[in-house]
Amino acid sequence: MGVPHLSTDQMPRDVWVLSLVALLVAIGFGVMVPVLPVFARSFSVSQFQVGAVISAFALARLAMGPFCGRLNRAIGERVALGSGIGIVALSTVGAGLSQSYLQLLVLRGVGGIGSAMFSVAAMSLLLASVGPQLRGRASALYSGGFLIGGMAGPAVGGLLAAISIRAPFFFYAATLVLAGGAGLALLSRRTVTPADKTGEAVLALADVWRRPGYRLACAANFTTGWQAQGARSTLVPLLVVEVLDRPTSWTGLAFAVAAIVQAVLLQPAGRLVDTWGRRPMLAAGLVMCAASSALIPFAPNMAWLVVSLCVFGAGSAVMSTAPTAMVGDATAGTGGTPVAVFQMASDLGSIIGPLAVGALADHYPLPIAFGIGAALMAVLGAWSASSLRRARA
Image: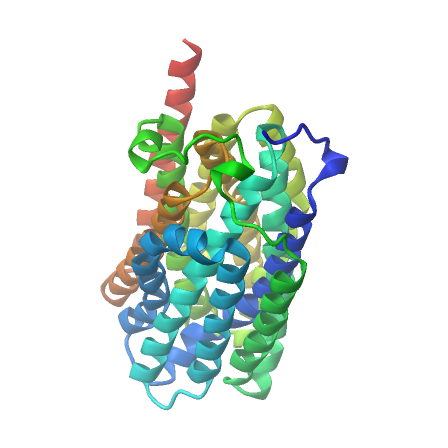
């Protein structure tokens, strides 16, 4: 039986549950954003090594990604989601107790394995729950859970860091336990199989890859991973502390203000993705992220930095919805390996980005490190706009 037509007032239960899980995960993850680079730096390592801590998480996600589709079919998305979150929680406690840089690096990598299990299972359930007319809004609602958590998390992280640089790790673990429990208790007890959908076979990756929209969505996810986890998450905390000479708590507040802007614009962006179109919205989001990224490293004060981060947040509202909806269109909501590859594209950007910007920041001015990601986004935005013109021709 196919997915029934649903109005915006008929959003399936699983979408709301997944949004709650996302909220709980994001609150904890957001707590870590202003703290992790500074905590890694406390072991007297280079900026490249700071970037490696962030990349280790993404590298483990990337390595685990190819196995997630098979794992979901074997144990079900609900169990895979809960188990993955549990792995992240345990590894986070260990990371908070780390006595060396190597321990921190390894435990962050272990957390990436659980994160891959959680994220692929969650997205497969999300895309299977709705039809094409709701994919943008369902993606916005799910991303909204992350964003609301992202608003509260960095500010809380800054306050916890004032007590102890290790305290945010244990807070994150607690929110993960709540998230995993909610997923196991409230999500539907089913696996996303062909019988749940239309009776057709799950689309092979080779078939999906031939579709330009899918390739564009993967490329967009790669650039988002590069710039968000690279320049934004790795360098902005160091910019605040080492260049603007402000305490770590100011980083959390700046990220929280930007997250508010992104959250306010998320639902309108999702509606426009469903009505105006995936590609024009994607092009607009990429241009906004590229422009703001070029401005951030020139910030002479916190006001400049906050405004630039808010523009990045506006673009990210689109980047949180359009690519996911494009993947749902390309796969007809069947999930599987194409969803895992889409997630892996972001992970690959999250691996290369922090290492690249960290290495560049060690040897060149900050505008160079920020500018590489900005250029990638600008080029991809031009590609999205030109592909739209060709499609209309």
